[in-house]
Structures are given as structure tokens and as C-alpha cells.
Image (tube, rainbow, N blue to C red; front, top):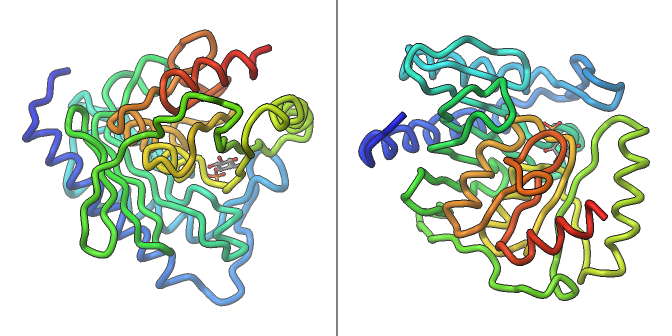
Length: 273
Ligand code: LIP
């Protein structure tokens, strides 16, 4: 599907607009004594009422603005596309941080082309990732570069120029399943002596945006869903980075490695070894 710069810019503007609207909702209308509305894959994989309200806002606004487009949301909003574009949204990425009032969570909104139900058969073409606590808005469209909008200023983003993994600050995250976490802990134990340090912020979307901004030199995680990945993936690639899966495949639930090409290659080698 070929979209021109004007169409891509319009999609990016829509992503920014509704990501900020949803972000403001989850901050301004957070109820006192917020609890867990339900759990998903495990009893620590939680959903709050604000995840649900944020996704409903995104669904409603996209129905108004882009009625022919498809939708895939973390909390279940989904319908097929009649336009060839599907919006992949995470209403609160970093839900545990949100529950605990740790300021590292984001609304991620990405317009994608291809079949989002098949790993590797889709890619984002416009995206916004908004942290409503810092009011930092990361955004990009294919071929347009990546930008951070903060306090009224637009800053063009570029990934780290570091090429030495031993001097690199590497982000990662962990799944909710105990057995998966045991494997992730073993990978982490092998990596820790070989890098500058590790950071685990709790939001894949913001981790990927930190890579785009050079705040992390690289990032890896296994277990990500399309909604965790889509927005930040485009922000990284439009900042000159690469986002890959295992053995150079497209990023998927099995593995995501992001950063400058050299670091991604070396980090992938250590992780898969
Ligand atoms: C989170 C991811 C994060 C991962 C967490 C969790 P959620 O997404 O963004 O990278 O390490 O375990 O999966 O569940 O907050 O939308």
C-alpha cells in the first residue's frame, strides 16, 4: 500500500492527537483507590478500568476520524480494515507502573499496513507514543524522521552512535509468566557482566523511544505483543535504528532487539547464544 507524505503526515497527526487525549484521560480521571479490574495471562498481568476507558476513547475517536480503518487494541477492541490500514494501540503501556503511580507509562498509537494478525506481515507507517506524566510525545511517520515534542519544542531524534556493547546501556523487560521469567533471568545473568548496565523501565513503548532518543544504547525483550511494539518500533527506525527479531527476522513475540545496527547484531549474538 503506497501512502504519500501528506497522507502519512495526516495519520501521524491523528496518532499524536488521540494519544495525547487518552494520556490526559488516564491522568486527569484516575479514580482514588484505583484497583485491578481484571487479570489476563497471569494474576500479575493486570488491567485497570483506565486501560479500558483509554482504549474506548481511542476506539471511539478512530471510528470518528478513520471509519474505514481496522483496529487492534490490547484490551480487546478489534475490527477488520476496509482501507488497508489498521491501528494498533496500547491504551496504557506500563500498566503496573500506572497502578503503582510510577511515572513510566505511555499511550501507544500506530497506523500499520499489512496483516497485523500475522507476525512479520505488517509494519507501522505512522505512530505516536505519549507519556502523560512527562508530557513527552514521541512521533514519526515512514520517511519523515522521528521527533520528540516536549514543552512546545520539537527535537529530531537519533539513535546512539555507540558500537561497543561493553560500554552500552541496555534496556529490557520481563514477561508475566514465571517460567518465561526464569529463562529471561538466565539471559540477563549472561548479559550483565558484558554491558555497561541494564535498565528495566516497565514500558516497551517508552524503552523503544528511549533507544530512538539515545537515552538507551539498545533494548531487547521477548514476549512483546504488537501493541507493545508497533509505535516504538517506527520511532526507532525513523531515528536511524533497526528493530529485528531472531536471526534477522521481523520483530515478534519471540524476540525484539532494537538500536544501532552494530549493537543490535552483537546483542542478538549474545542473547541467542
Ligand atoms: C508491559 C511491556 C513491558 C514488559 C511488561 C509489560 P503492559 O506491557 O511494555 O516491556 O516488560 O512486562 O508487558 O502489560 O504494561 O501493557
